Length: 363
Image (tube, rainbow, N blue to C red; front, side, top):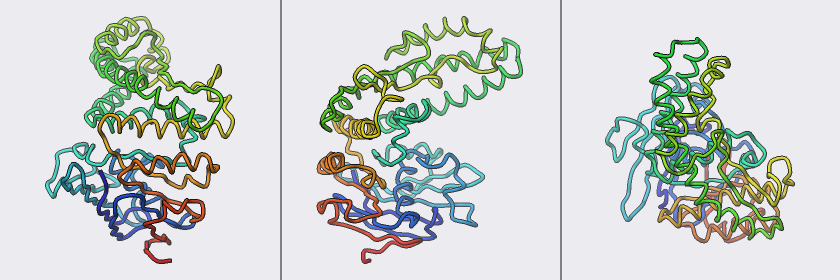
């Protein structure tokens, strides 16, 4: 899989931008604030229908605009697919596949598969459970785009159920939302458990390849004991637990069971990575999570585009070499950097220079 062409209109700092990509690594070089990360962000948004930097659409639109457009030509499985996404500030986004409108923007999920690595990934180790849940869910969507609907439905149910709990709604009003929370929550939990089990050996291997001494491992930490990769088992467990915690939920006005309260546990040796890992170990764990994700997807037959966003300046030579080695297995890698000399020569075969609002092949 690779992106052949990318066009942006009123996206971030780009009123109009058109780019053509070749296979292999393509590097965007520019000062901080020049707009190079905006290019990476547009591809991330196209792949996940969300940004890795902001939670709303408004910051993605050029100043004074109420709409932005991302258009990409993607080559996969020996065919070319054109994806158009219209991002709106105050109404639902709209999308097209090969020029044809789709009913929901979610229908374009899977057209572009990516794995990205950015400085924000340190939050996977040091940040809150929300960061790690988001990491798992985006990887699930990359594996199986239909799960975006399960995740969206589950989030909607939790919000509605919490509203009812806060207003102390009668049991008759709460019951159908509890049933949906259990149904969607059981499936999402099962998918996450299986994903973590599949990902764990790859994370351990890539962490070990960084010559770190302590063994690394990951596990799924559920707020409800006993959940597995079996949906029906999870339904039974959550149903029983829902009865037990209902009074507490009414008192606190919040749903106390379900995958929105779970976490991805990162372990280094005998201690959790969060709170115990050094700065270098934290970066190694973040690298292992991202490269492990990429390797898992490759093992399943996928060929995602690799995006390395402004990350080389954060790493020492050994960790840079590990990332560089992975690019040899990717059909396409998109790289951004502020300092050209931070990158090895093999990543500079195709390069663009970025200044505010423009991109050029010449400095």
